[in-house]
Length: 252
Image (tube, rainbow, N blue to C red; front, side):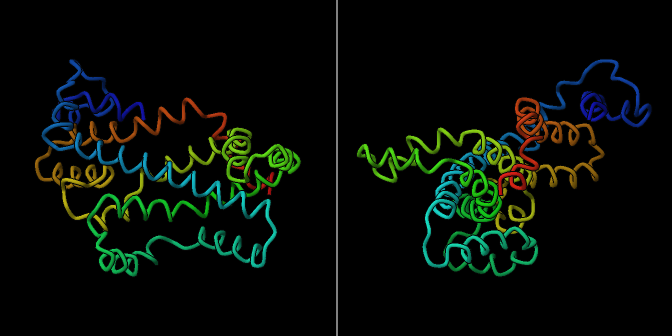
């Protein structure tokens, strides 16, 4: 990672003449060229939009489903939970072809809103799995007391349950953010318009172009830009990230 960062500040000549040496003069223009000339700026904006909306929808819908499955008894409860968990074991490349035709039929192919729906659906199983185990540990008496005081079940969920579950929500948000931000396959297949491509696909295109133009430092700068948001999130929430790895197993 350190090598990637300081190599992105070299000239192409420095990169190949001494790959482990530090740059004589940092070439900050590599980032400007990657951001503007290579279109990394627009890819970055698309990824921020798609990731933000997908993350909000995934956590909101996932928490509602997980709470209903964990706290309410109804016919098919366990079966429905098993269906969601089974979704975690379906590899993306198996569903990509039927998904392509479904999105085309619905008129959502090659649109950011279609990609948001796909990311939301793809990340719901994991979100529900983790939050289900977390909600099962919350005392039912609190929500019951809120309803006795006149609070509706929906009101109790948003005003009492969600604030109590903020640590679990934070954990799934971190994992979902990293998954959505770095997702490549769905974005590659479902988006063909260069103007609305996401950052991972844009960086991959930059790699192909760099092979022919021999402008590797621009590509390295693009990789650093792709890496920065994930790195920042991890550095800020690394304790919650480590705890969340086994959260589902501990609380399930």
